[in-house]
Image (cartoon, rainbow, N blue to C red; front, side):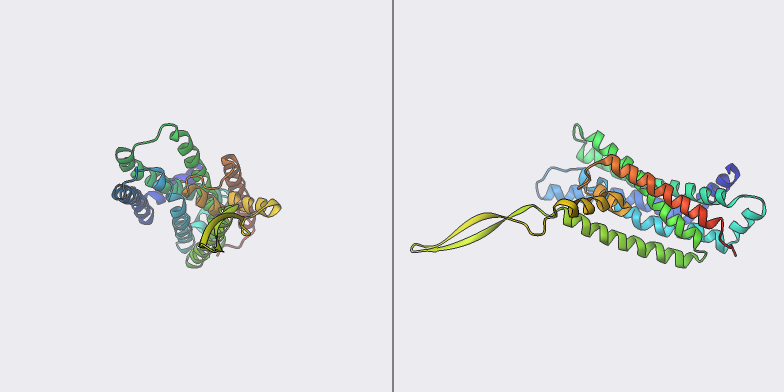
Amino acid sequence: MNRLLSADFAKLRKYKFFWFSTAGMFLFGIFMVSMSYIALIEYGEKPDLSNTLFIYALTVVFIIPAFVSLFIGTEYSDGTIRNKMIIGHTRTAIYLSNLIVCSTAGLVFCIAYLAGALAVGIPLCGLEDGALRGIVILVLCSFLMSFAFTSLCTLTGILCQNKALAAVINILAACFLIVMSIYVFSKLEEPETYMTANIITTEEGEIREMQEVDNPGYLKGTERDIYQFFNDFLPTGQAVNITQGGGLAEKPEFLAASSVFITAAAAGIGIFVFRRRDVK
């Protein structure tokens, strides 16, 4: 296992797409914080680092599928996986090695954005008192979320021997899950009531009265619990929550537990199927 990890990390260090993505995330962090600072200053508002600090959580949802599919797909196209088996490495070790290396890459993408954002954001915006604990919790949740998403992408990438097809499946699945998670988030964000204007006609003319009415789109009871579960459980739902600075996440510990469960479940299923799959 150690020799496998050593070889796969050596491959990662030479992989241009990895370094390109890392540099892109670092520069993206600088860009987003700078643009947010300029916009807030122009409107006379107080700069707030938290507005853009967690955008990377959504960004890596698109980078990870592409990276994992291409990185693992190269193992098939170059015949590396077959060679690893020939020299005696077990399929379980091969799977776990790829999962660990790809998870590390996803973690590096997150850290690269944070490094760029904090390098510019702290001098420009500062850091509010008492905000550090909340930031650390969300950052840790985002790391676990990236592991869960990487585990799902590894499952597809290592079971689909065509790297182009694996990339298409992973990216389309990410897009579908993002759209679904944004919809769930928007439904949960519906206010319970809203203000409406009633116009009353009198002898003196029309009088406009504001009245608070129930919002029929507000989720209640079991329906709201179901939406809340998917909002907190799905990696993309967590990404939307974290990007919003916590959003509608009721319990950060549930986000973390969900990510650990998804990571372990996807890895278990992947290993089980890969051990019985015919590798060409």
